Image (cartoon, rainbow, N blue to C red; front, side):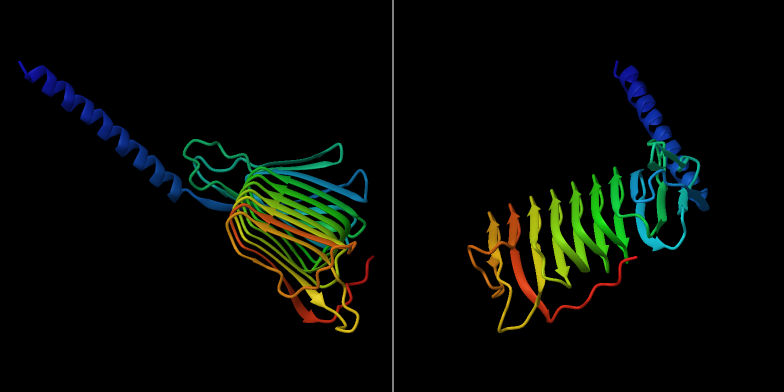
Length: 275
């Protein structure tokens, strides 16, 4: 009487085994067919002072250029179920879509190196899945957001930098920025400036925060209005001069992580000349 049940169990096991083998074979074929594909394209800005980028499924890296157009070098990793990339410029918005299939997309990756005309003063980037990095750029403002990826601004000049990530670290390093605002739901925040900022705001739900400002003339140091708060972590002002009536606030808040301000090297270096 147990034979039909045994046959059913064996049949079910065979089906599951065949399914697992088939999935493994498809994964192996996908990996074996993986290869990098490179392409380049120029895009004309409707407004030469503003660049807006919407990206999905790839890291975006910005550098300055003497060109009058936006030049993009794209590298995608393609396979059987790899990327089917698309890019376009419509109504002043540059869209960079790696366009992964979602099913067995084991090797679907994309990177976009974007050369930006020096006439651009306002930069807005929204990345659904990928990192954002800005190097050696000069602009009035950078508004950067990634749903899943790190954000880096290095060796750059701006009046305003706003950087937010739902899942990723944020690093503003070796830059000259008047006002900085950073926020991450899951990731550390680091700000290291070459100038005395007017304001710094950093919020992390889960991550440490560290802000470094230059040490100026000890006889006439700039004081800041420091607000350091952590629900679960240490707080250290690093002997940065704190004055409750200062018009220059530094506000660091973390739900889970240490917060710290500190002085960097003595003196203030001059930013690169703006175009």
